[in-house]
Length: 100
Image (cartoon, rainbow, N blue to C red):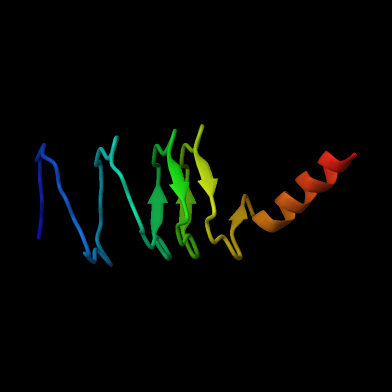
């Protein structure tokens, strides 16, 4: 299925978009509930203000993404890295610094 130059509301429930490609798409105001983003890649994406709760992010790849104001809560991020640094190491360093 291909969708081009459409301004409409899409409602997808119990759907699979595995292997799909989204380019130059405006998803502002879109809600994602109970989503598996494992293995997904977001490049040059504006995700500012996103609220991401209880989502599987394993294998997710973000490149040149704007995450200003984004909030991650209860997400599985095992093995996740930010600029090559494991997220768990960053969290551990933050907690240690906060104790001082």
